[in-house]
Length: 511
Image (cartoon, rainbow, N blue to C red):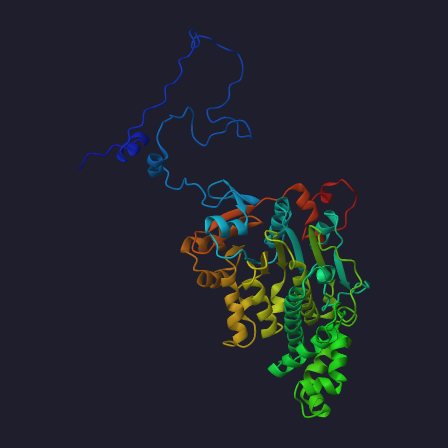
């Protein structure tokens, strides 16, 4: 019978790596201490199992050894420092290491090389803590001078946050007379007179290009796929309406009804410049796009985007939000069209900033806008691609990967573009998912087997826990920690709770 091999001690294990640890000297007890008897309660060997009372999972006293981190790494290989820099918004803590976890996508691009772009995509089932994590990130980035624009708050969840910061959210829908002109020049008008003629032409070209993309996306949402001829006609009409063809020093404000009226009642110079045989040929060829714009004026969005802006917009507010919660009664298409209008309109808020003036753009419920058609998908695609140039951190909030794959027919150009949107977001935050959805995400994001297991396991243990993964780097299991102030402001389950019986009771406290 072979002799039993004795168990190796910690000193033996460390000696294997070339270093023989020496126990730290224990200070001698004072004379007579062993004979002294004190008649009082003593702490148990492991300490009291209460916070701040020195509880230990193993029996005390513990032997203490001195060794370098190079040597000790062989005994504790999982005890490593986080490669994420400690800069930016402190989101919470790394569940595996216990260290604090920070997020600053701009610094990840500039300093550490952890990301190639500052965009973030969040995936997770409803109620997993996506929106609360976004709110925590937004509020804590205010300390670094980063403003935020909530480009379409479909559920009205961000309104309490905006009000608490002293700003007034833009509320659209039933019972409110607020109106946003989708073709508003915004802050452009305040700086127009200070620019040189060349700068004016450059800025106007950029704005008119965005308006053409917006109008074609809106016509597509009404069932008419726009053609190149439609785009040329819309561009010509916009140039005429805004006064760019008349060498005006001041730009004329225009609205969607103005564009519709110009298409429905063209003057001879317009159809002649566009090389139509006559007025009737012009009307016949452009009737689909004209009718599509008419539906936007008289349809579900009547009174929302078809007139001058009626709200006073603070372009310098720390957080600005557009509350669309009252639009849900008008249907998903109305909400999606509103998101498209607001996306194009809010892009003006991210223009005309000095270098280093970063802005966060939150696109909640992005799947609604993606389902409008290829033009809407292309608009989001362009915003993500230009995030570094336009100094923005684009945040897409989605439920599952199929939100990107259900755009258009399988194999279509729109579906291909939508699928690639995730590649334009270097940071992916993955909240709890079912096994089937987790498998899809694992394939699309090249998750390792342990990362996939955490996505269906440990991530689901607590609300606000997620895998934070950047390109070609291991994922971090992070627990978002909300302050009591943030919990009071952002409670997505408030609608599910019964009315408060009396103020100050336990039911009145945030959960």
